Length: 239
Image (cartoon, rainbow, N blue to C red; front, top):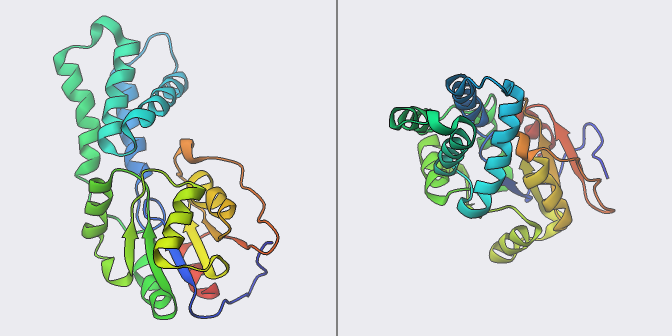
């Protein structure tokens, strides 16, 4: 069921909080890299939108074998360039394409509005656990650089967010589903699998959520709650 405006939940909830595009900016840097890639490719037959669709296809393939993260993304850029550019892919071009992904690694952590002010409030009333999928080393490094560790009981970095992954996290920390919430911006990874695992969920709207994370949002099953918020700061009004 949806949550009525003004509803405030009792202290002692467990909040599983996503990282990328929930706590800090992430996908905008990938989008900039993709724009640079499309410009570099300068394809004479495919439009920029068509090139982007080809890249999406390559990314889906790469994720199956190499998972998520910048190194996987870099593989996708190179593989897509090879497919579309053919004989024009020189060593110099390879280095240039690889640099688009490398630039993402050099980005400073940019917390989203309201995160720094709201996490201490949430942490004073509830248990917070970071739950973010992807390359373990990359995600752990971003978490460390964010300076947010002091607010969290623990961090979990599964390779994929599935109902089974959420069940495993609940079992590990002995979490009761009726007081556990998954908070994140991705319908595909944060909301739908959490609801399928019997948890409550909070969708944090982000204007640049990765296209491969788009999915129709499931309805909350009977007895479960789904809350949709426009900003991280709004969490303090409910928790």
